[in-house]
Amino acid sequence: MNDLQNLNLIELLPASLASDETIKNICTSIVGRLKLINEKAELVLLLPRLDQLPEALVDELAWQYHVDFYDYAADVVAKRALVRKAIAWHRRKGTPAAVEEVCAAVFKSATVCENWEYGGTPYHFQVRMISEGIPDQSVIDNLYRAIKESKNVRSWLDALSFYRQISGSLFIGGAYSAMRKVEVFPSQIKAQTLRIKTYCGAAIWIHKGVEVTCQTGQI
Image 1 (cartoon, rainbow, N blue to C red):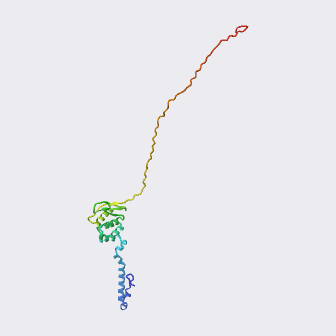
Image 2: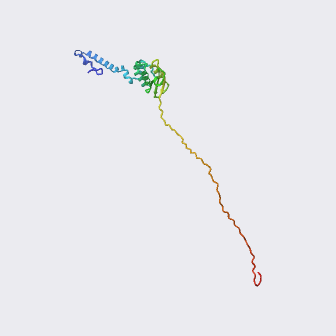
Image 3: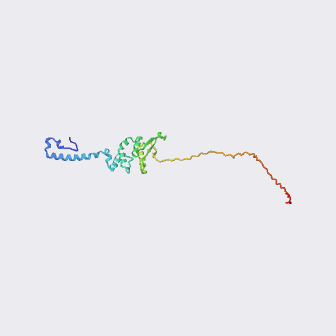
């Protein structure tokens, strides 16, 4: 079986032509050109090979497919995503789904909330829950421009809402105080009755003179 990769035209020639040297040389030349065309044929398939294309060619495709909010300074991965979805976006341009897809191409976590979901004014909407990092102001500017190009004319963007999850420790301290009221009254001392025995003592000294008379004389 012949294909462009392994083509042999001489085998396809009728016997009356296969022996002609000029015809054989022509077939050899044609086969070489056909193989070259086969090698380059994949270059015609641009979108299926978008991930392999160089950034310069991706920029040219963005112009060709009229990506209104294309940012030439963006990352090449984001550029390829914008080009890949450009045709589908043009089909749904002006719908909430198109706005959400455009936002998701810039920030994957973005969600479009209609006015009745947050109590807003009719024909207004918000883009919420953006959790990716923002390297600089140009990213926000490009997102505003992308939303403006993809929304319908009567709709208005109220706000962009960014979601940040902060982890940390919360310490709560308190002091407990207890008080007991103790009333101390002066002790009540009753009057005491003293019973005391009184002893009185006295001494009487009595001196008597004694005279002793002897027979021989008086002492």
